[in-house]
Structures are given as structure tokens and as C-alpha cells.
Length: 264
Image 1: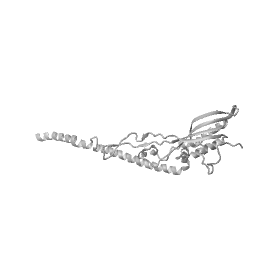
Image 2 (image 1 turned 30 degrees about the vertical axis):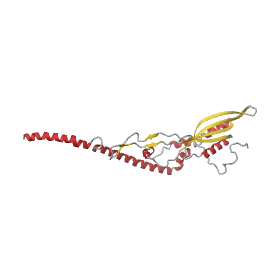
Image 3 (image 1 turned 180 degrees about the vertical axis):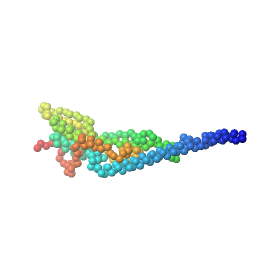
Image 4 (image 1 turned 45 degrees about the horizontal axis):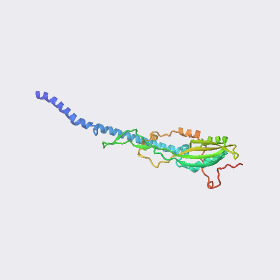
């Protein structure tokens, strides 16, 4: 009887020791225990769910682009994928002539490209693989930055006409901003005051190169968080930009100087 009484506590001690030395480390050891693997599996399932959701939303966005092409093309007209310098020159020249001004110079140069900082799309969250112990770094996506074209635009004319031109330029669909404006008074041959002014404008127009393919981090891009585009930008462009950037017509290039206004 005494042996049986002593055996019970001994079995309890043996069970506790087994739990401490064998069972608990197998359950969780901070690296590859059952608990850690279950957590990793849950993370992987969440990643798969997010990926499926992004794929579904991407399909909806593609369908929106195809269905509402005319509406969405407003954005591409505002910031095209190519420089299209000839369209800018022709448009500014046409606006100046419509405003009864003489164009002395239009020159375009592209500002040096500045490398954009990368953005950590996954907000610094590291993901563990099911089989390895090393965390996988969060994917990063380079931020798309429009390329900037600087346009030096020199015109001569009366003050009222210059005001008209400036108002029209700000309504050009591709116009970005006026970065510099210089106005000089002109003198006649006898050094008396002239009604004409010389205006030197520095304008900015942008374009954005189309990406050839998505990179790894793009799957986490916020644009895929929903299946709808934010159309507020389109309405803002429509309300403030109404003048088309013209195409150069065949035969215009290489002709007589089109910059001088001829009196009717």
C-alpha cells in the first residue's frame, strides 16, 4: 500500500519533467515549434487572401479602364507617357497668335532626373517562410515620379493681350505651372515708351513613362486595395483644363516663320 501511495507523486513528477523537457519545447521553442509554425501558417494564409483580393481588384480596374476609356483618357491627356515637345510648341504658338502676340522663342529642355526614394509598401512587416528561420524582407516599390519639361517662352505684345495669353495657358490640359515670369517694357526707335511689352515665361509640362511590367512589391500597392478608381482627379482636371494640346499638321514644319503676327 505504501508503495502505491509513493508511486502516485512520482508519476506526477515524471509527467511534469516530461512536459518541461520534451512536450513543451516541441510545442513552442521560439523558432520552429508547433505554435510558431501555426503562426507562420496563419500569416501565409493571410498573404494568400490579400493576394487573391488584389488579383480580383486588378481585374475590376482593368474592366473599368476598358469600359470607361473616354473618361479615363482625361488623365492620359493631362500627363502623357511621352514628351511630345512638338505638340507643346504648336499649342503655345497657336495660343500666342490667337492672343495677337509675336513669339520670339520657344525652347524645351528636360530637367535632370532625380532618383526617387523607395517606399516600404508593407510598412516594415517581415514575413517568415514555413520552412526557414530567416525573415523575408518586406517588398519595396520605387515611387513613380513624373519627368519635368521646362519650356522657355518669349513673346512680345500689348499688356491686355498678354493677360489673355496667360489665362489661356493655365487652361491647357497638359500645363503644370508657371515657374518664372519676367516682363520688360520696350522702347521705340526714338527711345520713347512703347505699348508693347516683352514677356519671358518659364513653364512646366510633365510626362510619365509607362512601366513595362510590375515589380514584386506592386502587389501591395494601395491602388489594388479596392476595385475602383478615385475619379475626383478627373473632375478637377476637367474643371480647370479645357484647351487641347494641338497636333502639328503635315507641312507646317520647315515653312515660313509662323511666330510673327501678320496684320490683316
